[in-house]
Amino acid sequence: MKTAFIVLTALLVAWGATPRALAQPATLVSLFDFAGGVRATGMGGAFAGLADDEQALIYNPAGLALLERLHAHATLQSHLSASSVGGLAGALPSLGAGVQFFGVDGLVRRNDQDEAGEAFGYGQFALLGAGALRLGGFIGVPALNALGVGLRAKFLSVNTLSGGSGATFALDPSALWELGRLRFGGVSVERIRVGAALDNLGPGIRYGSGHSESLGFGARLGLSAQVQRVVLAALELNTQTGLHLGVEYTLPIQTVGTLALRTGFHTGNGFTFNLGLGF
Image (cartoon, helix red, strand yellow):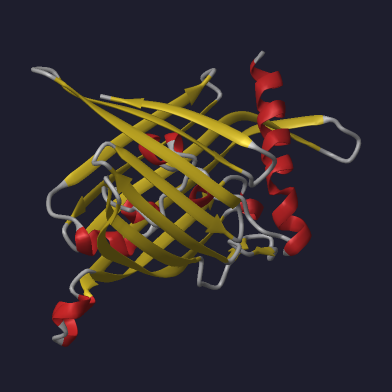
């Protein structure tokens, strides 16, 4: 069972990397491609135009400039004890930091004759740090106080057999503008936001064997809005993962808290549908 799961995981990763490989050969499938938070995942990954919690660190660092309080999350997934993925992220107004990790054990090295050799593991480890500011306050133009600009720095380490280990870094600039509210008859549309981000501006990764891979340059453009203060809708166009669309419905429950129902989809490697629940 464990061996079958490892083989299946490897096939799924290779299949998921195929569209990128066609556009740009030798592109690494990294933590930055799949290690997101549960809220953004439940909304189909449509978060570049929303970025209103600690997930701004992952999807659009400029959103940190518009935060008003501390946000944090921790995630851990274990797959049949064969692999694990997780991370920690925290964000204050204008600052954010996080760590992400992925690991799989029990891989077996084979030679050209398909003879089994030593067992080994494969892992990735990433550090992220970001800063953002309100552009209006920085340049003295009050009309731009709702426009945030941000920059994320990230470090990635790949750890396996010596010939396949390596490390790299990248910078990701971004912007997020909150446009205010509109009314359409009796319908109130608030917190309209437009965001844009560039991903993986850096040298790519070089391994001990001398082989090099790109992290894969990408760009995101997102839009979000809150309707009647209970429905939050978000749309994102991503050059690497296609179209993302997500909706979050919040339902206050007296004396208990708030229930959040989420759904969304994205088209990166075929149509993927998501459901989420928050409390």
